[in-house]
Length: 292
Image 1 (cartoon, helix red, strand yellow):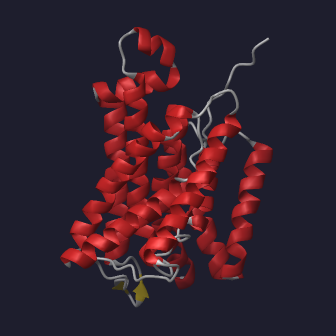
Image 2: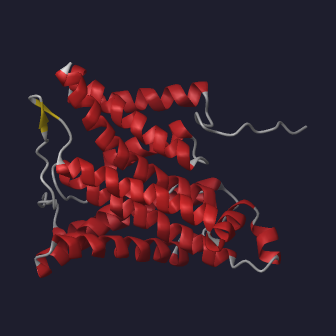
């Protein structure tokens, strides 16, 4: 029973990060109908920015803040300088460009920082509190839950309670009509990419210290898990991304804990395949009326 409780709490902690990363994918999908396969590489790039700033200033929090700012700027730059010029005649165009960005970013990071793992520190202890002799959540786990909760509530407030959020939703679902009504559709898309990259940067900063450390490929497996979470919940559903992220985190924790860590990659693929076969739109996808 103690092991089950530990795996559940650990799965929820990792699932919260997957949820944040899945939210970043959903934001871009809703805004531009593009699966941003470069999201993981972009998050790693911002983590390297944090590493450099922290090494220069000696402050973890300045590095953390720099990563978030770098994420916002990088997302806006990618949309303005690259994605905006991708042709829309085939959905594969954006996929190929995103994969090219992955190779470019990882190559540049490898040339600048090398391909050795660098240490990724945290501001809080990862040693769990003990209740009745059972190790439960650590201060770092509580920080992860708090940070992801702030992001989820903040995004929900922006998209449902602010004029900017309303314009972003309008630009995503009806760009031509929005343009006729005076909405700066291009600007809203850029803002959407910036927000998504900022959320991805946060997810990277939260999960990289729990792995082997900082490396140009550090977010590759995280991207696969987060993409699975987004598909499980439905690429159009932000609440689905949160639920999917927590579900994937729990499944990976149970599978890794009871069957061995070598089976977690297979578990993700099985889950992704099962959802695509049973409900391709995701568990939280809205029903779409069939057109004659």
